[in-house]
Length: 74
Image (cartoon, rainbow, N blue to C red):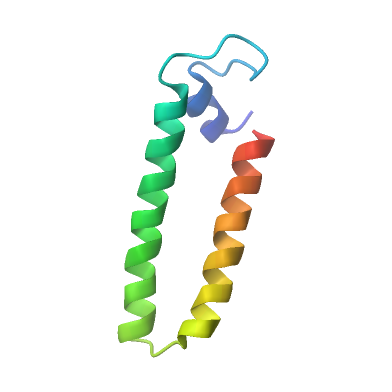
């Protein structure tokens, strides 16, 4: 069982079991913190590494897609 699954479901319970009241709040917090980190990475890439915005958009799309896939699988 992944650490993310244990954190988001409260003591490692399966999603089919009763969820804690803060379950959705925790998922939202994880998503927000991930987006803040992603924002900082994007800023660095655009301003200092001179990565093209189009290329960065492809990377962001893939990163968010993978995050959502991971959240759904746990």
